[in-house]
Length: 620
Image (cartoon, rainbow, N blue to C red):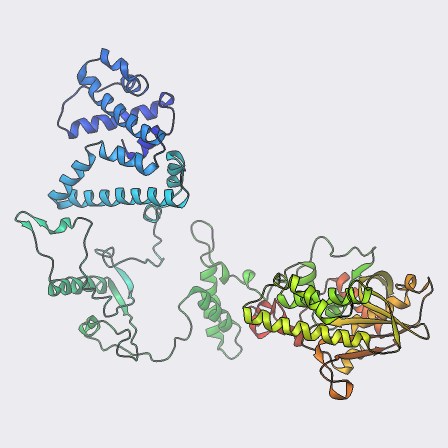
């Protein structure tokens, strides 16, 4: 009976055992008695059940029958008592181990040496590993109990067991140690990593109890360095003679004297080593091999024979094995990235019978920067979480809104006090970065206040004003939703939209003239988005502005203490409507192609984008 069987019994009602449990107990008891040298009659399964469920009934049986069941019942009772008193699975293991003669038998076998001694050494190693696993499980989780510990052990996968049952294909590559290669032979053998200090390895090694040193005349002295070297040389000879046709031996030579050096055994092969001083043509990996074969198969500069040979090698790699699975799935052209047809969703991204919902920033991405970035970020929601820079902008926008709405005075000290209350909630990479950005926020708020109080010939009407309008754009309808940072009016009643920016970059004058987000604001004004602010009448659109709060103006415009103001004049022509139609068509037709530009600098998808060098290797 093994320790695991005993623990299973301890964690379950003993009277509920099935016939298989009883048979295992019977075999364990008989083996124990035979090992002790006692010839006893075979106890029946019923007798074992009595010993476990009602031990007092054993008194009516012959002592030769009842001795072993009584001893087992007492051992299990002691271990179960340890568990009931709050003991761990490790405590129960020790009670079982200490209460059986198994430890003494393993000790005697280990001291005798030979094959039985080596087996005993392995059993002792396994028992030590079992106790260590129990201790680690208790330290890691605590109080799990014997049954849970056994359940965890049952899910462990021992690589040696799973590999031993696998059949070896005759045309497959086999990886093994030199010891395992004894008696085998292949046409081609590669002995890799023959480095000094690794081969020969002159460190002493042995089993747990060093049973190999036990002989008839006592304990033999450990092997000398010379004997270890001779043993390593014989092992290298075994590895090198496994090849019937070709043998490759590889090593690394470092330029530094204290770096890696080839083994002394290389000089004993009788063949001068060939030094390869440059980097290998490609990594010795399957993916690199497939990439090289693909490139060769389509290389117009390669000869037809070479391209044909590359294609045949790819076909061999993509062939199915005995289990019906491809040897190297990536070798099949159907798995090559860049050769797939553009995918189409079974469910349309947008209902053509409904207006296409867009925002001003989305319009800019779809029409001018990168439609793929918009799709992955806005539709797939694959963008990373908000950064500290975005939090910086949100805080400044909120404080600007409070000043414009009258909820906070136009006083820098008051705004900074409000800023202090929320600043620690922003995540920065380092304390110095937090201090730096806080200084930038103070400068941005100071520029805002100067801009807010200066005479500009306009009166604020609303701040953070939400709007929702539907516009005609070619054959489609576009629903524009968003928020205007500030709406102002002049003496003539025209409406102006102001958008605060807190980034470090600013568009050029030409880009501002055709800025999509500002154009959308003006179209929204034209379609009545701000009518409630002007008594229900539609005001003329006077233009729109970008106010760069993080950037100081030029000296002629007021200097560093005032923000950069970039103005877009009132819309003229149909370019804004055409921009809307282009963006709507791309969404409805689901044409999200990448485009490279300055927007790639902060794009979260550049590493896998085929418009960038970082991602182009995927399809080339």
